[in-house]
Image 1 (cartoon, helix red, strand yellow):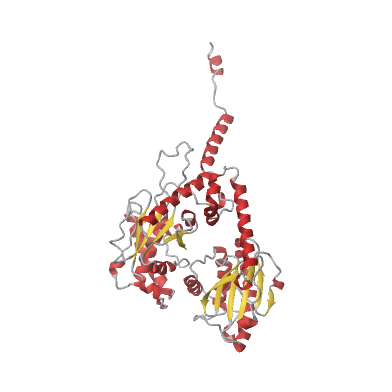
Image 2 (cartoon, one colour; image 1 turned 60 degrees about the vertical axis):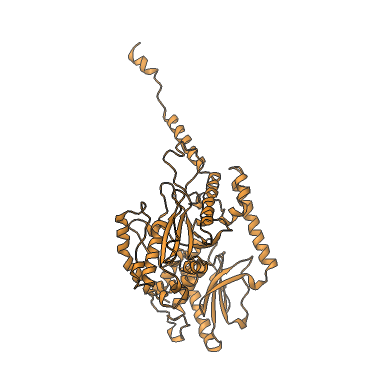
Length: 483
């Protein structure tokens, strides 16, 4: 047979065949990352967290947000913390002055055990998230040095062996003195907070599904122990190799890409029903659950709760508070006798000319989405601060200790940014209303002033979490705005 005829009978893979094969592999990978497999993996990891809590009875369980709450059943959860992995990334080590997490000190002391379990997870390929292996060790070391400058035995930087190399440990340690100086510059630790001073030096310890239980009893006489619990286990090299395995390490990450609006609270309240559903039915079920939850909350607020219980706030100073409002409509204006100027944010866009409802009541509509509202806030702050300044100017001469209250639907973002702007613009360093002469529209604020005032807010409201867009709006207003 001629060579050309022989060659003609050979069958080569076509581009279409290669494309189909790649599509099949992609479908396999996506199926493994299905919502069903994610939720099953979350339950599996939560079982490990429950085992840790049972092994260390009395240790309060704290979720490291954003995703830590997925792995902690509500019956176990005692609180939340905000330690970011990006603050522990190699070469980017940081002690965050925005996320001080000082409330953990009170939680540890009030528990009676001098300890807590801090829960987080991480994606495939890592034994621990950087938040647990590096961010928290830096946090413990900095707080120890700042609180106990003469107790040099407590100044050691502890990092998990086999996870943080000696070289990286050394580089992290070299940055600690500057972090301590930055923290002391806020003045938070010299404010006389008894809880901060009553705590012992902090000592991080680590536990994962792949390691034996650490012995903390020998440490508790000397330290308050932060037990850093990684809930997810490391996937072995040959596990899920065919793309069909059902365990997903760090399954709760990137919820915006898979959760369809499902939150940890909704998941744990309905997890049995969700786990029994097919993959195709889950999105519709999540939507139905969300609708029922929203309707239930609205009904409870509008029928069972009196109007004056539709909001809550926390005092930042004796004159300024921030918080959250809930319900189908914003809270009614405060009574005149309350001596309160109230700023309320709503999730609609409204004309600025309609914001001021009375000399002591303003309803501000910046938009439905928090990110958009955060960016738009910079254009609203001049009007809001002028409104509050005018109230304080009049009230200061006629009222005893006039107060300002800022409320938003979450109580964690827009109201916090606005309170920060007001704390700088309308109040002095002691947190008291400025005199009329000091309310200068041409005042210039620097980052150090803003940072110190933000730290005061975060110390009073540790669960506050103003977004980058919100803080950028505040900085833009305070440092660049001219009347």
